[in-house]
Image (cartoon, rainbow, N blue to C red; front, side, top):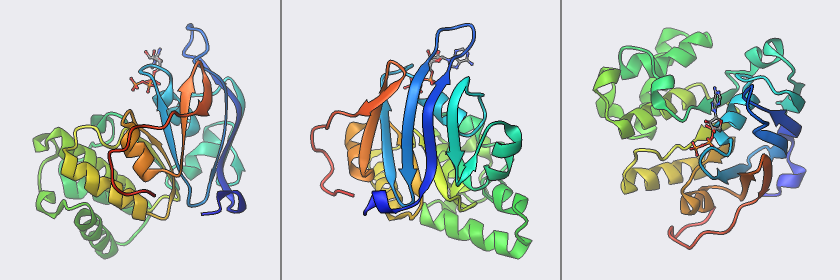
Length: 233
Ligand SMILES: Nc1ncnc2c1ncn2[C@@H]1O[C@H](COP(=O)(O)OP(=O)(O)OP(=O)(O)O)[C@@H](O)[C@H]1O
């Protein structure tokens, strides 16, 4: 992929954020995510990765810097709100994402909200669950899911909306090795641009084209991990 030639879907410049009254967490974050590009984001616990994703979605207000999403300069809720269906955030904690009674209802929520007719939504739900190998969970109540199942159902809900950009906060949490491999293959096959946060350096190496690490409030190239997966993006 020639990322430089592809349009920039997310552009961030000199972003600054702090959880008041604490000192700045993001000091000077600059990045560009191109169409079709999968960018990895690593960094120590508490370095600000989840915070960065929430700032990029407009869920937390940046104190300084610029965010341009899908060609729109986003300053406040009026700019971010219309883009939320087109940019999907997988929260670090699945319980922050899943709020309907059953799996089927949860995965259907986004497409219904986007105005798709019920019959089409049923198709989208069936197709998305099948893609993630989750058909058997369709009628399962959300509280009855395991941690790994919740992770995948949350991702299914996101994918059902077909966002143009995916921001994935630790998508492998709670997944066994086989589910991680399946997820890696799925992410590699998706056409969307994505920013993937993970502590699993080998997973990031396998699914992303380039990797950055957040340290002292700034992004820098992430160190290369020891090989673990046999395939490359
Ligand atoms: N609402 C908040 N108010 C104050 N501090 C917060 C708030 N949310 C997060 N923090 C702090 O901001 C710092 C960054 O948190 P964040 O969750 O972004 O880190 P992270 O890099 O995603 O960490 P991890 O790898 O452990 O998930 C942490 O020290 C955290 O305690």
